[in-house]
Image (tube, helix red, strand yellow):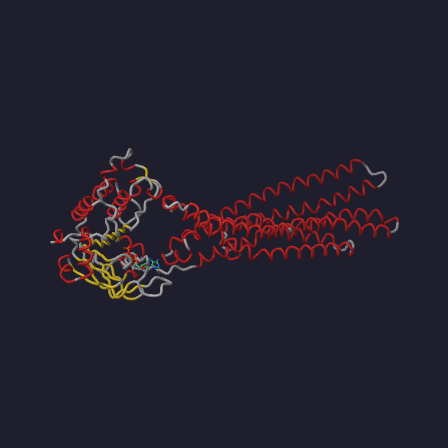
Length: 585
Ligand SMILES: Nc1ncnc2c1ncn2[C@@H]1O[C@H](COP(=O)(O)OP(=O)(O)OP(=O)(O)O)[C@@H](O)[C@H]1O
């Protein structure tokens, strides 16, 4: 928590300083009120006192109360401003850090946990900050100031207040100790419910198609019930607090009057009035002391949960991305569009064995290199090493003659147009999606967008949309078909004018005719671009300059279609399973 608070900006620290001054003023005003009360008590009890004097004392007391109210409002404004700024900055930092994470860190934290950490956890810390700023500063000042004021009036009263404070601290300490582990668990369970809800919503169609509502409901109920039970336990423990505090406060008032009654009884006639007024003032001050501790207690209700939340936020902020940025932006002189794998092996984090073993190949400028093989043989993994979604465990991946690790990630990815296996679109317009991102070159214009959409064979449906290129795309492209989404994501890659294009099974949702026309258009428009294509269909890759056949993470064959038909059994099996002998002839 303290570590996070160090992230407060100078401006916020200055505001906190101002809030502290205002708190001093407020405490002064609060603690001055009992003095006027004492004056009034003495005046009322003294024969012959003037009404004007009583009214004057009452008026001053009223002014103090109004002043206290105004300073409290100003303090609340400062606290709200500081906490809102702080949480906005923190959210920004967490977002930026998550952006820099590689797939490894994202997998380690899990998406749902990262969402809870950047929203719910930050809100917990913000809540403590907004109250804590006031209370953490105000409570000790009030307590110390009030104790100084009452000290020396009567040791019996001081001892009574001291005992009340000790009882209060014992109650608070016990509650916090019992509830703390539950608060820790609460955050994990919030992650869990987030995950179940997310999974249910993203897989809603499958859930409905398989009549799995009951199964999902049971899963949700289990997560929900566990969260409820933990919350109930933690909150029940904390509910003991308030009655406990009220008991101590009221008990203290009674005790002060009780002790006062003995003191007044034993005093001489002359001292009785002074003692009586002291007793009233003392009970007010004692109340301020207990109130100060009570404010601290209220914070203690929030602190355990917030400190767990702060720890989780720090975990994200302290995690260094496994992928370190290189320094170079320029490739080797004269080289462009070349991709080379040198004896590359790869193991996923936490996996037991390598997914890729000794992969070596080169794709030259303008080449079409295709990867084929059974599902799970490592095709996507190979191409994910090029934009550095992961780093090779052994061997080297080179782009334009230089190890991908040497480039800045921005420079490396500027060279690449990547089309993922699952078409990802963002809410906005067609044009916005096609012109997505930056490529380090000149900004994309309307012509580029139209060109790319035409090449990707997406014009056929885009131009029929009511707003054509400004047509609306829903979140995740949910208002488009699978094939339309794929074509728009291909258009997005084309629009970048990259040196290297990577298609991760990106033609699978296209019909054979569109697939063929699209590849032809790519040949014409992007002839100079190196194309790496992962495909399941022989038809898609048959004309490739080089086909790499993968089998259980190893290269089982490499060559053109004809060469592989002659000398690669794995390829032949795939080919015969898809096409007839006549088609292959
Ligand atoms: N993030 C991951 N963590 C651990 N293992 C993974 C991860 N992603 C993939 N794998 C494993 O790596 C292997 C290769 O996966 P990959 O996605 O590269 O296969 P693929 O050939 O592209 O399959 P498909 O054709 O079905 O898309 C699989 O056995 C898979 O279980």
